[in-house]
Image 1 (tube, rainbow, N blue to C red):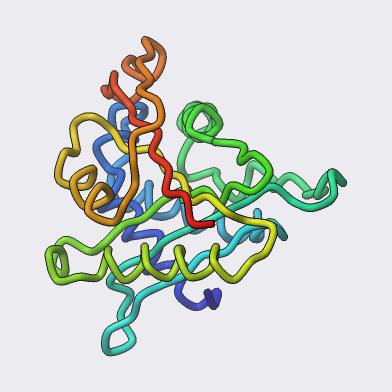
Image 2 (cartoon, one colour):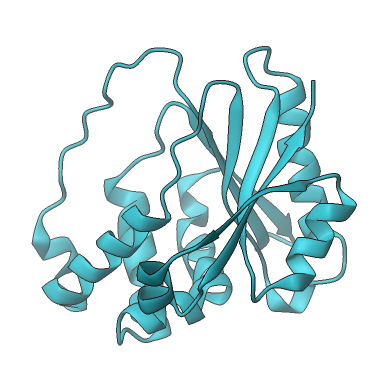
Length: 198
């Protein structure tokens, strides 16, 4: 994905995850979008990850982010951004958001390609955009010899998304319940779903 789409993708991530992050902090939509945009600026994509944006008339209408275990265990060193970049958000909000994101972070196993996020703009839902993004991820895995499984997490409060994943051959591998995630994100049940491709 080209950096010029970062602001639109950031706004789209707010559409998709507003409820979870507004439970965690008191940031409004503009501040949440700014937070995601600053993350894109200061934490470039890791080598073992990709983000795809679906466009219509040069507008981002959907996005998906995937990651997998790097072939080497060399740590990808990143310089921490200065607090000034995030100053408008407040240090406490920033700390809470970073803690929240770390709790949602999943470390893929060997052979696993993990869908870190997938979001479709509300005006373009039920039009096949999400299905196309998932098919892109599926083709990506099929063309990478070291990958054989596509995985994701879906919250229990989103049966519509879970149904779409099941239609595309994802199966629930594990159901997780956690008090910390419930307190921080107001979501107590999470399904870990897998699609075996090889």
